[in-house]
Structure formats: structure tokens, C-alpha cells
Length: 71
Image (cartoon, rainbow, N blue to C red; front, side, top):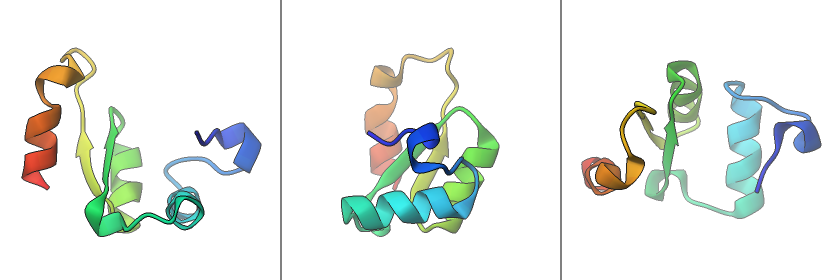
């Protein structure tokens, strides 16, 4: 887990995405970032992550497969 107050970085600044990518040793091209805030998604896209804006009124379990397949 990554908490902004612990790593002293906040979305949508690019540094938080780069930090998580490097710390977790993930390949951004093989990862997906899902958020209900379009600015945060824009930041994640800039970091190379597949990203999608999720409507919080929709149960994510109903759309997660679609999100992943769309990447």
C-alpha cells in the first residue's frame, strides 16, 4: 500500500506514479490504474500506465474485466 502522507507525494503529480512504479518494480505497460478522478488518471497516463476513470456509482466488480480487456 502507498499512502500519500507517508511517501510525501500526491496524485496527480508524476512523481507519485514514478515512485510506485519503481518501488513495486512494475511494468507500467502491463499495469492498470483505476480512479474516479480524471486528473489522477491523466497523471497515471503520463507515467505510462494504462488508466481509466471509474464512475463510483458503478460496482467495479461489474466492469473490471472490461477495463482490463480494454488495455
